[in-house]
Image (tube, rainbow, N blue to C red; front, side, top):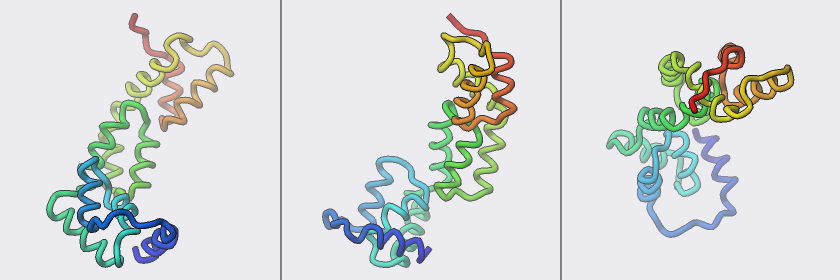
Length: 168
């Protein structure tokens, strides 16, 4: 963590410090707006900390007091993203936020059963007017769209092979 702290600190040394808020006040302010993962909060606060030890102690205290929770962050993140993105993209973003592999694996298990329905919903919102692909170029275009949202190739094939019925 010390190397990460120094890298972020060096990159932000030219930034003029904002008001004289304490590190704890900054952290609580960030957490009062939305949930943050521990890694994300550490990254945002590292420019204002005097040392990596101070930051680590604060993050430990915030977690112990219930201000910061990676589990709550994951729940909120999945709730926001599940209707728009596939498993692969959600898992990738959680990993980038520093969520441990066990929690990411649990999210994968929870979302796996709804993957096809979510992909069909995303496909229907985007392509309801054009309908199912009629040629290979349209099939590829729609497939790329779903792939960019993080849906698996198997799910994409199932959606494009048998598109959902449209509701009028």
